[in-house]
Image (cartoon, rainbow, N blue to C red; front, side, top):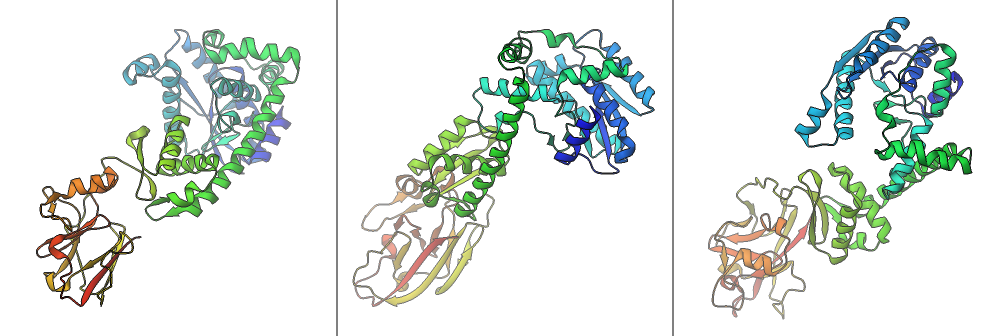
Length: 448
């Protein structure tokens, strides 16, 4: 067994010389086998070990688990950090199921204990058997390559030195070495899906293939490699479509739909949210349409419109300067808005209809300097080119299908008399080029 633990440590780079390691010990065979194996390898790797035990407060006999762990720590001369959490009460308070609450309590406890012990790694007793069970569990839930990786050898700060060993091997090691352990009776409850897989599904598969567990673990390893390759490819694709303000929809739409989904997942992770398949599909569909907003966990949303996809908060703070002054001629870059403007006087064109919506022709004689760029304010109105009455800027933006989340920071070109141009949407009748004007101000806007 020790040779397999050494192999796992070296193959996956789990430990380096001189590391401080917190060993999570529940009192079961796997965690105690882990503790004694690492103790045997303590000198070889110059390890400093600390034992950690959490009483979840679920069973009435957990004091016996603690006594067993205390005995093991004393036997090896190792320090012990222990605590108790009322997991059922935590589950009720946070509206979680018991398994989720136990996982949360365990993570918080181990983080505190590792800090107290000065440990950079936390060793867990997951085995190859746990990997096989997790693969089947995730398969039944319809997981993709990421879920079908099962349990990885390392997910910092956690390491799993027993990942090449079966549960039978850890129990045999404890029996051979005279290491007492306790079986958690809750692991026999077959109403829990993982327990049903452990006691019913895996035995059936093993009847057909005695090495079924090993085969499932091997498949998980191959899927982990595939997922790594997919992540690498997604990062390359994302780099190709990235802009300062988000992802460029045009090249993104040219990618195969499956690659779009990978890019969306990676972009979501960068924004701090792990996307479920339904969220990914909704975002990809919005990419196809070129507009939309998909609400995501943690109060975030995917915002698709104006040629970009970006992840952010629907109600993000729009604290911006009141306005930015732009020259009568020249260049102006407004980084806070993500826009730039080029202004120059040119001879009056034969047609005053701009070649694209991001160009406007204004009459310099009708402009009241200075020129400013600002964002919309409540009550803003404009007399659109060719009309006699006024319209609300908010309505103009909505009619132009400017995404809701962009309307609050959409640029307006203004002078001392009012709004001259709702950029890319409508020009003002009050600033139209007069018949006698031979030279016009050409204003071109562009996104940064």
